[in-house]
Length: 487
Image (cartoon, rainbow, N blue to C red; front, side, top):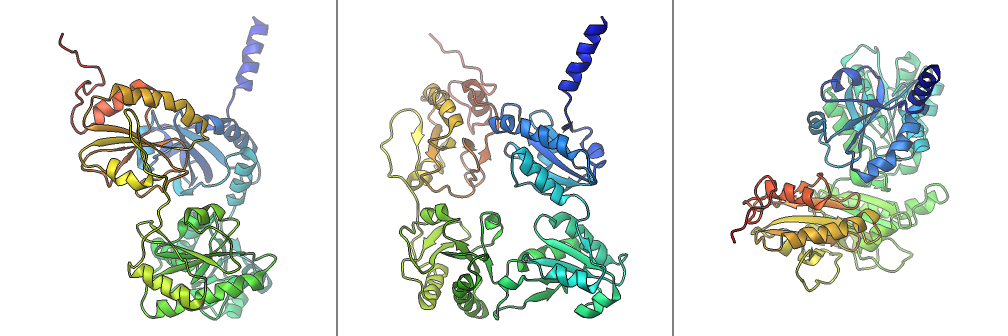
């Protein structure tokens, strides 16, 4: 008996988890117990979630102790629907960072243990550095990244409290520091103010090197001010910040290297900025960026900018996410004309698409050129799969998806479709960040398709479609059961 109890004890130790489990009923109270935590919203059937699980467990063990411990937790969204709905979870796994029980920011970092540990450790501890001397402050603002500093007479002021809340929320995006030292305030000539400092490598004659916040001391106003100004007139656009930029956006691609060739990088950036400043001063609303052509090589291909050039190549993205490529060789004159032509709707957008295929019975093959015709067809409900030819999960789904189409072949008001998202542009409002991604687009609601997050067996699809179809299916009841046929 004793040996049996020892065995049970060893097994419990072996299978003990350092990942906390939250439910709808205890999420608020348990999350509030931790200064900083990472929470995974998952589905048990999700392949990406299963792949993440052992890495997440290792990271939880590594982060639970230390000067600034970080907790890792998970929520099963197939069971805890209330909390997952509250935080707008639409895909799995979704990871979010919380501070003191409140949502702080989306987690878009690594999905392996060492990377998770490194990133979360960087977010632990104070989110704003106390600058106790002039030397501390001067060294802090001389960094190569954008820096925000609060200069306060007292840490009890409304502005200081607002600053700290914004530092907590945006710690992963910007560096924050603060000081109440009189000598520091005197040196920088700011008393009870918040200043955004541009790093030296991004400074130019076309915009101020530092900006002071002048609006009401609210969290929303300060966050929006920082987001509007931190990227400046022409930012260095990378894969990390690409999704943060507003549109219409005009991007110049060339050899951007701020480590080995800052002077050469700014040679072209200054020309982009000169044109941009002229157009902005004339009342045009545009956003500008430079990107390294090697880092963003895939995007260059997707913009149809084939070949190489010693001069920048330019692609524009409008508010409808359409792409336009500049065919003329880059100069300030051709760049200005290209911007005006895009704004004036004088150019045809570039559309990456395979040729329109001949359709056969079964799953309908969609490409960018026939997307509107098939998926946005207002006469039919559509279930569409976005896949990649190399994706193992897509290959596993393929025979089931074919079987689904066969079972629903006599349903005149529903279409089962698929599109290779690696070879065709995916238009808004569809968002594809992993494969396969499925959406249901009902009749009359094509502008608001619903991401499909249910099971991926044939019966799961049929139950979902039978319930969600605009009109009841001919062959299936709303509960997914087949209707009896008369002999």
